[in-house]
Image 1 (spheres, helix red, strand yellow):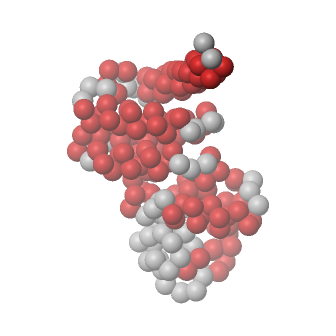
Image 2 (cartoon, one colour):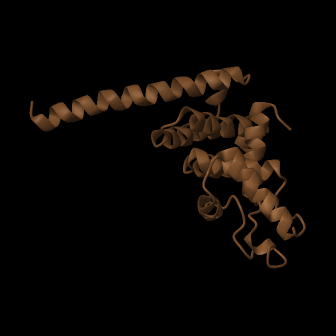
Amino acid sequence: MSEVDILLSGFNGLYRKYMDNKFERLISRAEQRGLRKSELLNSDERFALFMRVGRALEICSQEEMIDYIVDVLIGGIKKGDAESETFIVEMAISTIGELSIEEVKVFLLLREKGMYVSDSEMDETDYEDLVRHVLEKCNIKPEFFKIYCARLSGKGLVSSPGQGYRGSIASHVPRITVLGKRVVDYIYEARGLS
């Protein structure tokens, strides 16, 4: 056996253990949320979503992020979208899987503040309050707020500056898009929140 074969053999074992732990967490979380393992896989659409979660879990290193990814799957199933709007749930899983935990926290704080595209304009004081709230809750540096919002915008979860806004202050305010609302709805559905 060559050195390369030995390395690959070791890597395969490590990779399998790495993914087994994540799938065990997925199944445990689903059961905590009222879904049996069989319910995660009982249709072609759900199996495809399960595999999409697997891809997202490959690049995920934090347990808290695993929970968010799994909650999107669970919420999609519980809302009935797994079969009726599979593509939307797939998009939501893939999108949340590409974010960092800090970006997810910023995103969910925007939801907490009710920042949706259809909302009206906010003034400078409201915007400063929003930024201050996010910075305090997420413990991030001010310069990263705009970076996180830009990444969320690039993923289609929040609107980009100038999209659906009025006024100069409003052009800097991130607002949750229709896809972003769906992601939040799935997470909240899985967690039993309103």
